Amino acid sequence: MASSSRAVLFFELLACLLCLLELSQGKEPFFTLKNLPPLQKASSYPAGCATTYDYIIVGGGTAGCPLAATLSLRYKVLLLERGGSPYGNRNVSYMENFHIGLMNMAPDSSSQAFISTDGVINARARVLGGGTCINAGFYSRASSSFIQEVGWDEDLVNKSFPWVEEKIVQWPKIAPWQAALRDGLLQAGVAPFNGYTYDHVSGTKVGGTIFDETGYRHTAADLLAAGDPNNLRVLLHASVHKIVFDSRQGRLKARAIGVQFTDENGRHHQAFLNSNKDSEIIVSAGAIGTPQLLLLSGIGPKNDLKNHNIPVVLHNKYVGKGMADNPMNSIFIPTRSPPRQSLIETVGITEEGVFIEASSGFGQSSESVHCHHGIMSAEIGQLSTIPPKQRTLEAAQKYAHNKLNLPKEVFHGGFILEKIDGPLSTGHLVLTDTDVQNNPAVTFNYFRHPQDLNRCVYGIKTIERILKTNRFSELSADGAGLSMERVLNMSVKANVNLIPKHTNDTESLEQFCKDTVITIWHYHGGCHVGKVVDQHYRVLGVSGLRVVDGSIFSRSPGTNPQATVLMMGRYMGVKILRERLGRAAGV
Ligand code: FAD
Image (cartoon, rainbow, N blue to C red; front, side, top):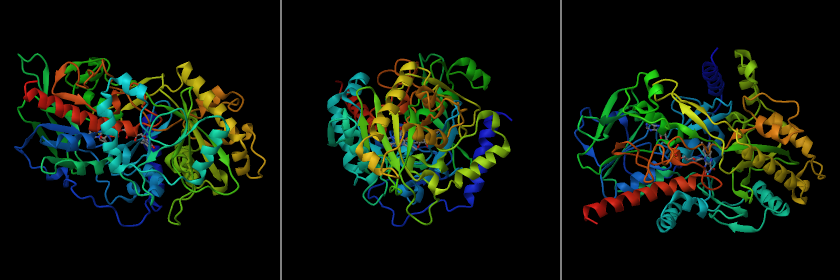
C-alpha cells in the first residue's frame, strides 16, 4: 500500500472510532460581535455576478482577516475562506476542546490533518480565523532583531501590534503547571524573570493568550469587526482552486485578474478584480495553502507543473522550496496529582536560541474524551508510534484503538517542551494531485542541519536542569525528584511520530531528538522574499498578485508566531492603503 493511502486509511479509521465519542463539549453562550460583516456561504454568490473588487483575499486566516478588515476601510474587498464559521463551533471556542477540535477528522472539521514525509503528524486550519481557531493560544511578539531583519517600519509595527492586542489578547490567570515551569526555569538559571510581557526578551516570562479567563477563544475572525461591513464581503466554504491571469500578448507580465472557487456544494464560481491598476489578488492561505495555490495556478517549477498538466504561467523553481517546521521535543513528567489543563502561558527564552514551554491537563468535563494533555494529547497524534515498516492495516487499527484508551495513570503528569529558533533545516512542498482539498506532500527535513540538533540537545539539557530544581522535585510522585533516564524512557514511549525508534534513544540525546521529534505547528516558508515575492510581498514575474502570510518567512518569528502573523495582516493593510493613497495624491 502506498504511504499516502496508508495515511488516508489511518485517518479514516481514527475518524470512525471518534464517531463513537462525543466530539465536542462546552457551554453556551458564544460571543456575538457587533459590526461583523455577514458571513455568507459561498453558494450564495450569484452566478455571473457582475460585482468586481479592489482586493480579493484568498484565505480568511491569521493574516487574511486583519488584512481584509483594514483594506475594507477604503476599498471593496472580497474575502474567500475554504472553511466554515468559528462562531457556534464549540471545538473552536472552548480551550477545553483544544484536542477534540484537532482530532476531528471530518471533512468539515476546522482542522485538516496531514503527515509530512518525515513521518510527523501535523495539522492545518480550515476555518474562518485560520490557525487562531485551532492553536494553543499563546501570544508573544517577534524580537526587534526579527523586525529589523525583515525590514519592517518599526513605527508601524509598534502601532499594529496593539491594534490586534486590544481586540483579542489577554493576560492568562497562570495555571499551576505554568507557574511551576516559571519557578523551575528561574531556579535553573533561565533568568531574569521579565514578568508578564508580549516582548521577546531573554529570560523567563509569562506571555499573552487569546483565551479569556473563562477559557473562551478570541480569534482573527473577530478582527473583521474592525472593518467596514459595507465594503467587506466574506464567503465561507469558498475553496479557491485557481488564480485567473490575463496573459494576452503585449503584456510584459501576466496580470492576476480574478479567482475560480468552488462552494460547499461543489459548484464552480468566478470573482474578478475591477479594472483599477492598483487592484490585487492577495493570497493569505497559509504556509501550505499559498504555495499549493500558486502551483495550481501555474506559478512554479515548470516540470512539476507539466507533470500535473497545469499550464505554465510563470516558471519559478523556488515556489514550495524552503519549507520549514520548528521541531518540538517534549519530556513527560509524572506528578503526584494530575495537573489542571493548561496549554502554553510561560516561556523560557535562552540565549542559545532554544525556547522552553509547557502543557498539561486532562479535560475537566465528564463529557470529555479522557487522557488528553493539552498540546500533547494522544488523541491528536502526539503520543505512541508505529514504525514505518509495521504500518499495516492491523497496526493502524491497534494504534488508533490504543490512542483512545491510554489509561490516565500512564500520563499522570505534565510536559515540558522545547522548540528551537529558526530552524536552519529546510525542505519542500510538491503537489500530489490537482485537487485543492487534498494536502500537498510536505518535507521538513527536521534536524538535517547540525545546529538544529545541537540546539535540541541544549534544550533537553536545560529541561534536565529544571527537573533537578526543588520546585520540580517537590512535584514528583515521592517528592524525591526523577532521574533523567526515567523521564527520557517514558518520553520515548510517549511521543508519537511515525519515525523508527533506536535502542540508544535514552543514551544519546541527539538520537532522542531525532526519534521523538514532533511538531509545534509553526511551519512556514514556501514563498520566500527575493525568490517568490519581492520585499513588498508582490509575486515576482507577474502583476496584481501578492502573498501575505507565514509562507514568506524564512524563520519563525518570536517564540511562537501568531502574534507576528496577526500583526503582519494589519501592517500590510495599512501599508497598502498608505501607498495607494500616496499614488492617488501623486506623492
Ligand atoms: P492560517 O491562519 O492557517 O490561514 C490560512 C487560511 O487560508 C485558513 O483559514 C485556510 O482555511 C485558508 N485556505 C487555505 N487554502 C485555501 C484556498 N485554496 N481557498 C480558500 N481558503 C484557503 N502560534 C502561536 O503563536 N501560539 C500558539 O499557541 C500556537 N499553537 C498552535 C497550535 C496548532 C495546533 C497550530 C495548527 C498552530 C499553532 N500556532 C501557534 C501557529 C500559528 O497559529 C500559525 O503559525 C498561524 O496561525 C499561521 O497563520 P497564516 O495566516 O499563515 O495561516
